Image 1 (cartoon, rainbow over the protein chains, first blue to last red):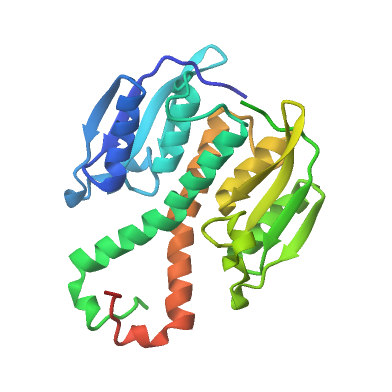
Image 2: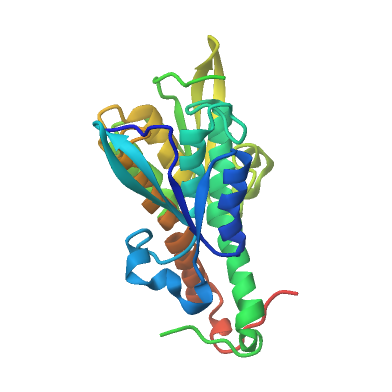
Length: 146
Length: 146
């Protein structure tokens, strides 16, 4: 078992979507260095084989970072915006700018609401965006896939 | 700031839904004692004022537990199934039956997939269930709320 070192080597894979901008906002708030790799989702770059090794679900945002395990440097991959926010604050928020100490009552309340955003509000906003913008015909004549 | 004690006083509020059964499964696997409070969602019990103090979003499952902060016992509330699973494993899985050590590469991979289930698969399964079972007319003539 292993814990990470605190020296960031963050590679950010993202595009300009509501989920995609969450992570650079957090990185800037934490004052962390990072390299941006623009993933053009209009050309399905996020479904290419090299990216599926970073996020097997083929969606942005995702990050990789370098951690030291038993004295050896290894690459870690983090996907799903909530997972990335938890990783970044746990690893790189020693002054608790965006989080509270791990295991505290305050941090569990933060996780409650992060999961609420993640599982309730976010997916429903995504559905609304999809149906309003990209499949307007469904407003009068929808059918479910078989 | 505070960390929790390890003596559980878990009150489980749930019903027999796919999300509702996740938590008792985890509690049984961890061998934890808990009291079940059956929440009949067909009568909207989860929207009653007393329950909204436990989960302001008015959905099951949710738990409360007793933790000790600065020598004083306090009640903590945890809602959203992913948040509850993180809480239970962080507090009560010292042998790592269902998780890995906090901060390890393995645990971050677990969190990646927990968030995938939470934000991608779960909400879409919920939508499918809703449209197939409860609004069959939407299959031929759907309209979005104004």
